[in-house]
Every structure is written in C-alpha cells, then in structure tokens.
Length: 177
Image (cartoon, rainbow, N blue to C red; front, side, top):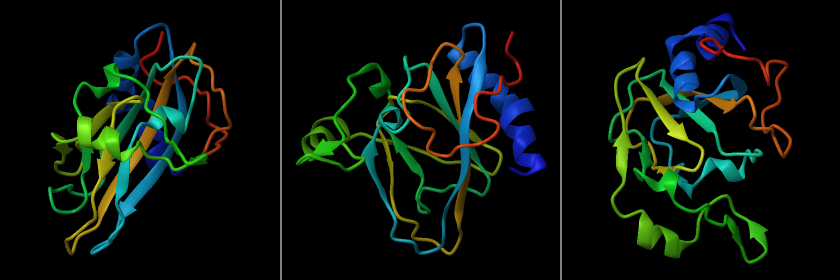
C-alpha cells in the first residue's frame, strides 16, 4: 500500500466518516483495493451484498469508495438500492454453487429502481455491507477507478479469511476513541 493510499485509508476525513457511520468505541481497517474498469470494458458486476464475502460476527461494516477518476453514468458506476441494507441477506448460492450474486427473482423484485453513484475525483460513496449493489460496463474512452477501503466496528470479528490480507488488517483508524 502506497503512502498516499495508506494515509487515505487510515488518517483521512474518509476514514473518520467511516468511523462515525459505524459508531461505537472503535473502527478497524479490514482491507482495501483499487478497482479499475478500463475503457470499453464489458465487465459488469451482478447484484450482490458484500457481507457474504466478508462475514463478521455482526454487520457493522462500511465500505468507502473513493473516486480516483471521474465516475460518470456511462463508465460503469456503482448502482445501489437505497434502504436495502435494512432488508434481508439474500443467498448468493445457486444450484449448490456460490455465484457471488443474488437470484434473478431478487433482482426482478428489489433492484428495479437503482441509484447510480458518480462524481468527480475525490468524491466518496459510503456503503453498508448489506446494501444491494452492482455495476455496469464502461462504455467510454476513460477508465473508472475507485479506491475501496472496508472498515468494521471493533466488536465485529471476522468469521472468514480476509479476501485481501494485509499487515494493516485490524488496525484502528483515525477518529476512533
């Protein structure tokens, strides 16, 4: 992790806000990654909830998505279903196989009014771990790059291996008591 990304993940206003959203006595860094959709990339991410990928003893987890490049309606922005974090955790298993996506019936019933998250570089989208979300392909000449950092409440204990292990996993972030 570079010094700039390390500072952003641990000591920035973004980390402080993630801690405020989680609340409680402390917030720990779980993992981070860079996610880029290159120009004219057909990659799309199907509707899912992150908690199934990073299960913890409770769901006090927030992902901060820092827009490194401009995110537009055409270059594959994150699409979310507002309020879905208050609903059920949907299965991501189909025909005895983990697919990482909710069933088509869930999409048809619950994902018909998505809100796209876009903005200039430096914008941040905060997302609860249970929020239904997806993204579409990048149809532009420009890349769409995000720096994603996942934070968990101090009492939210991981129940599975970290998908992106780091020596920084578990570190208390700025703004915590």
